[in-house]
Image (cartoon, rainbow, N blue to C red; front, top):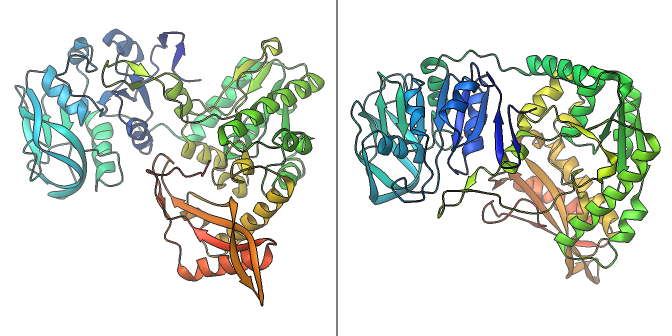
Length: 535
């Protein structure tokens, strides 16, 4: 479980939850979670907390240092998010990033004003003084800026340690109090040496031990599950994805046959995927899976449904109905295991900030059909061992547990599956067409040795047809979109620059081997402005 949990409007903090770790206070930056991930990449545990956390609460959590995230506000505005002033008296090292640096300057007696020249994007940072923060870095660093305000007067005790052509105060330091600020974002890949800056702060300045490892996590998670579950039974809804599959391995290691895995085949999996999943779990790892073939039931519910949000809601509602009846048949169960990840916990806590009021807000992007909204009479207790982990950490746990590579390295796959990659009405013939095209695409990507370099690659079946020529005949058939993107976390993504010869091979095979397809197009739109999925 996470160390900070939301209960209504209150946040409960456990004592020593961040001992030897870094607390990251979130002021609404789109990169806040990325800061936490970057710290963890150096085997140092970090946790994202709302900016409203008090000094007393932080003292109970006992972190080694604090990072203040960026944010969309101006720190001098009336409703800008503030920091408990007592935090500055805790004697802990603090690193302010973008808004965090401006707030540090403002709170400690400096001055922040709208910048005469705003900086967005790449900027060359000149390191005036390396000190502990820039130790081991070059004198000039390509950094990533995103700010409209600038620090114009420094607080007492601070010195400028970095500048750019348009920002004279781009990095500051008070070495005696171990306070540091950077106007740029060291957590993004665009900042050269950004990982080293975060390592310098966490390891050299804060003195954090590198004890956050997945082997230790597995050991502690198994122990925790055993203690909590005892001799009672646990139900896991297995999807075949990285999270639920790795969770099945962890729980099986911890409690053996007290775990029951339920796999509901909605009919929206990729070619051969459902059969391979069940056989692999049972034959190779002796983890029994109760497989429910509900394909006809789900597809019939989508008859005439074309709106993507309605598809998701329909699939989600039907999933709950199937899950309820099957869990009662297989039960009774005391616990429901879910592969909830740390980003899910953070988002549910509402740590994003309204720039007008400074208050946390929650933003709905699209519906999913995780096992939420279950009927109350099922009375499950939740078991969520991965609620501390990011997606990349779950993959590392999977490798630690011996989860098959085909699952650990599996690209992200939406809960509604191929139903939202068949644009328009979902029918069995259209699903079959998409499955065959998707199989060819992934087969060729793997053969080219590019599967691990790509975040996601898949096919989309369009609801329109186009004119073509095959042999001497005119055709009017379906179109397939090839979508391949590179990304670190799915928050942003760029279209993958696949070799032309590979694209040609994919196009030729799809058109020749998949009936009713006469055109393949390649999506070259990044996220933003597009999303990775089409629906």
